[in-house]
Image (cartoon, rainbow, N blue to C red; front, side):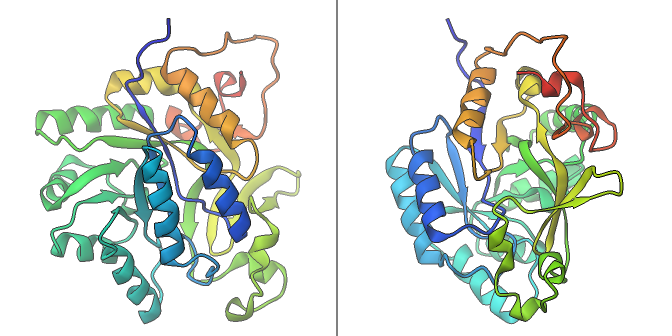
Length: 306
């Protein structure tokens, strides 16, 4: 008999630039997946305007009817007054919890007394900061993607000692968000200026690979965002996460095969991990180095099995 899940699964916001049809199809399928939380919204680039706030709200209402908790993710890099106007509308949506991914969103939400989720880009590393945010209305926080398992375990223990109850969320699957810039690297690849990019990033629904001279994919370029080249996969760490007090594991959407990813993590949280095969070859696309306190692009054999 499967164990009762102790971790919740969440879908992060789509980090890449998809078509309206792709978003609609993806979330129509996601409504039936065994995830408890779904993050919606454009968190990377304000020029990606195919989906308006009303469109995200509409999808959110449909997902709510399917029993999902919906969270609207704010933009991580605010660059203009127009970005601030959009942020105010998002924070004041009146229906859904908001994930604050920068200090302006955090200030807006805390000043209004609204509950919020603290995103990984806020760089929350110590219990003193978490205590301040908890008093300000933080309902959940995402650990920095580069935080190791041992460092997070100590931080969670400190939080318990100080009575901080907001659950922690770990980025468990997907290309790791590493950095944001005012410069658009995808537009530069096509020799186009950022403000006349012609939305070339939509040609790359899972980003643009940046390879070393040895042909290793080192990074993934996604407009103004830089992600890891390899895809983090911590499904084999799920039982340990539950034991150390992690509340939520985040799965970052990919354009293909996401239903299988969700199914695998749902099985993992129920204790149904595949039997490791010592003859399996390491899949160079997978990484888990940060979790084990090593360079992020490293990977253990366990991460490539199953």
